[in-house]
Length: 416
Image (cartoon, rainbow, N blue to C red):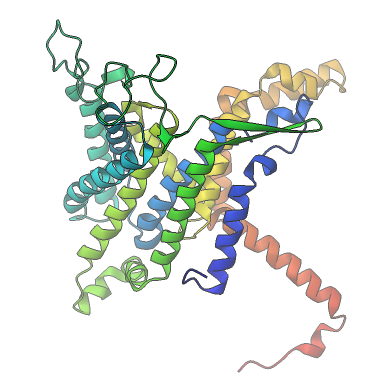
């Protein structure tokens, strides 16, 4: 199917099924129940799952295949966001041209950064990419946010190219030469896909359950599926094999007479284009671009996503992105009042002790839980969530085989 091997086809179909059925799968608890706060099937969070999944997939092409750890991928995320915003402001609200510009400009920026950074390897490469990202953040936060229309004007460039601390926002005064300057209600128009607004949604009520189907989510999911398919083809291609060879032993590869630099630069650029695509999608779902998307914490976040899910695996980065965004949006909302409701069946003194022990790990302290989880994965599951799933499946298969073969020694064959 689509030029994929049987195993990859099965994985791709599973990902398609999960993304299409996400509104049902992420809403397991009825509306109004005590457990409904753990539902994640609302449009904004589902969009974050797939958008950051794209970001992590692209990062995994670089880190997972070549072993080069970049701490500067947030720069490409920010470039993609600003590119999409300027496309919305200057030309129109169709998301397709905005995403194309995001990918192209991010790729060009990645060529520049990669050409310089890839002259070094190891920790020096990582520090170089971090430096470029922080310089990009400084440019977006202050240097490119200066008033370019003059102090007394209120023009398009009043807050420079990036909008500074408050970010770049849409306005009814924007030119938009290929689209309406304002919507039907007189406010700023909404990003759309050939007339289908990204914020439009339909609700379906089934008993006590409410399922929301968002145009923005399904558009983002479709883009993520394309990005995932391309990553599979890259992993299985001769180009992907060359990247694995670079990760395995770059010095030995040099001895064969092959120059690995063009391959590494290509991987870096493709990875940056994925990040730019994710940045453009973030703006398409919520028209706002700010410098915080270029900050080093955004780069560190995608590293955590990839390691938690499984470095070098196909589905791992998507799982890692989903886990972190779920914890950020769901676990962070749990407060002491909710904990007291959960443990109200306990004696008063014991209830207070339990709540006091758990509270530092939820709410604003959800990062502590994430840190402990990250430590556990690195120590016990170096392959991330994917390795955990493989171990579980292996144990289940072993148990089934044992149940079906009472005399295990009878089927033992000599090694060949």
